[in-house]
Image 1 (cartoon, rainbow, N blue to C red):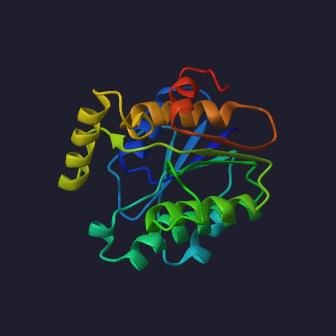
Image 2: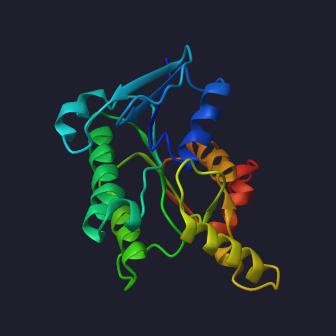
Length: 220
């Protein structure tokens, strides 16, 4: 019995990922951890309604073959940098820590282009600190993906993000800022599946440009 665990299952990448997990045959069960019912129904789907602020309550449930971590929010949605950090770093690290403690051998984490704990930019520093902290947990296989803007149909309104994506598309039409060009959420989801399937032990990071190849089964 192979089991995939997913946090962030209702987000842009998370929804695309769960669609693929349920459509494929790599995993016998797909467990998602959500705040409220997702309204998804599938014979292989197991849904856990959890309080992310109380990790001790759901930590025993974080057991399986791979944890896919796609959780994230914005300052606008969270209300402050501290609240965003609690979601983007705290919640994801809590799940990663529980997974490592329970013997889950693989973590696939969606980070961000430019992530580094030394950055002066809050978002990049937050993502870099998360990468650093999960690397210290000692997963036999750690896969980190660093996409740029995520392109796709979100359930919520993010007008500034849509504006940024449109502007980036326009700039890239001129051949500029290719490293920051938007990437479809479907491509990131495919890349996550391919990264999880790689048998080699150790930690691996894919920068933005490499994600397109990874999604096509070319890990580099």
